[in-house]
Length: 134
Image (tube, rainbow, N blue to C red; front, top):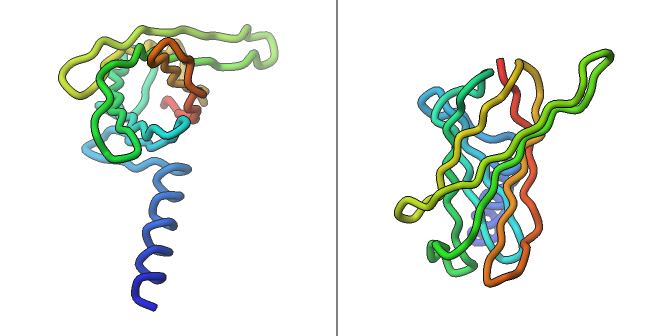
């Protein structure tokens, strides 16, 4: 019984962090999955228009860091009324066990952010989440 309760608690916490993200030191942390990889995406501050530093840590199924991927961060805001859609991307550079990119958000609002990876010549499914820039 204890194991099933602990497992359910773990699953609930994982779903919460995956869907909601968490605030930490004014930033934002999100967890997503692509195939058998886990991505931990973090912003160094609360998302805002302008420069936003993004860190991506990737681990395999056994928890080992993945350092042989090509990582690109995309951000998109769909057109609204007379305002055209806005989009951008940045190739992430590897530094140690993480990948780093700068996301330049043009305006406040909700942005769709996608992290795409290529590993071993294979394109992995993207990880998607929304970011509210204030």
